[in-house]
Length: 403
Picture: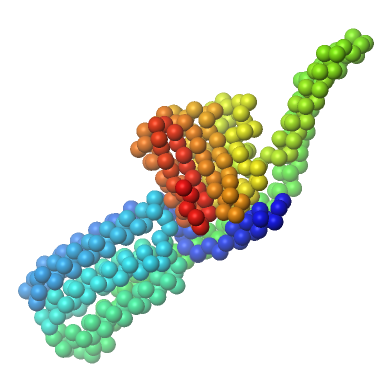
């Protein structure tokens, strides 16, 4: 193994992963994506209702309408940005979503400034709190709590500043607490759920890793027995009958020498191929076995990975890549002999899966986009292209985006 490949394996296998459900359980979080537009719809619905209730207290109806429009923008951005096809959600996306939601709440406060009678039925703090509830699925808990604290301070300060004009006269700190509590409570609830979820996921990984280590010796012995059995089968099929024929004839003809060389060459090639088999090649072969393509003569050339860069993939990435390959192999319109994977760029490994598939673009996107989003959630870049039945899926490590 040359130095470049060794450094690449160490670098990418040791990359730190954010402790978020989206990073640690990307497919699970994808199934919960509909919660984001649902929560956003609830926030918008409550904002409209609250604005109608405040109609007699509105100082500027135009500002109240703009507040709802800005909230709709925040909800739309949240729903789009958290979509599985655009994973992962970054820091600035999180800040933008909550920041725009907070701006809508400030606009509403401005629309009722000096005429507001109660803080309890204002919608600003509820909208911010609802969107913060979903954020722990995508961003670290500490970051979400910091954002929640900032939002609570802003809306709490605005509530305290309105205290002289409110119907009930009390200390400004009380109104600040009323405005800040929903934000902090819902954010802490979401953060607690996400923290527990990620903790359970990490514990499950440790258990699975320990079990894998215990089985490693046994699996190695099974693999050695399988290789030995394959070699014995090859000998019984070709070499033994040939040698038996030589013994029975009692002489060696020139054509026997040529046949002996051919048999030896095939056995040697099979032994080398078996020794060089990679995880990626085994995964492709197993995926295609159910299509009756396991014995295809091209089986040894389906995967072009001369540097064995599949070793760079982490356990999570291998699980997603394996599921992606299995899904492609299971497509009814797939031509099995056309499925191939090429791996290049030792410095920043890029994997290119190609196949000929007689399926519509819509069906292919529906089947494969979740896996592309999952790969993006585990620190990879992924894309898909379909041209006249030719499917191309690229996934690579960050840096220079795959062309």
